[in-house]
Image (cartoon, rainbow, N blue to C red; front, top):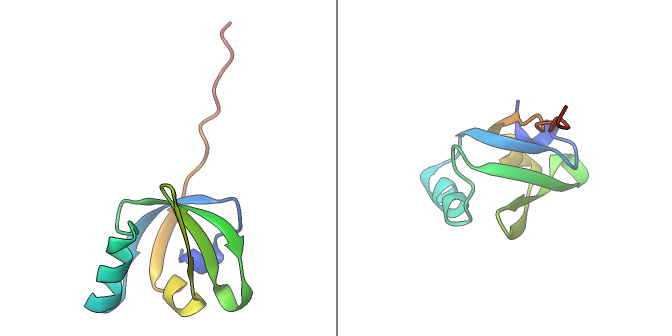
Length: 82
């Protein structure tokens, strides 16, 4: 799935980035690369997203979000000791 489909509150692992080298390099500089975990903070118009990567937050337009493939992460539920 691509990043446009992730609702706010979702954490996901980046699986692929299908952008030209310049755009891909800029995202890497921001920490968004294959294997990175992103947290969707806010969903905007036309598929845009505000994401957190580590301690940083930034907005990504819908066209760019469509070029970022992710796998949503399922939170691990801790079990209470028996």
